[in-house]
Amino acid sequence: MMKPEVIKSGDRVRVLYPAYAAGETGIVLQPEVLQDGSKTGHWLVQLEGKDIILALLPQEMTVIART
Image 1 (tube, rainbow, N blue to C red):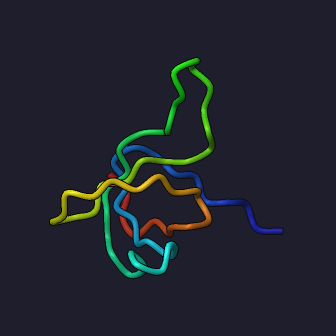
Image 2 (tube, rainbow, N blue to C red; image 1 turned 120 degrees about the vertical axis):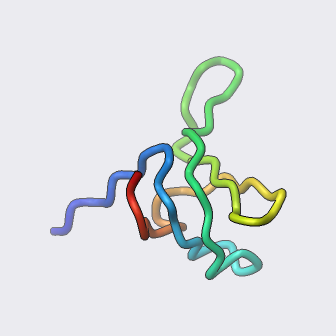
């Protein structure tokens, strides 16, 4: 069984899902954290060249470059 890819802040990623953003590249900002301090499992990703931030699960993106 393959080990899941570890996502880190600063990684450059290609978005796989949602469909409207598929193929876009972005930079991982940080894990999404709720007000109570609990993590959701999503990562906040800033799309390159756009004022859009997505909350993505690791399986909704693929790492294309590490920082």
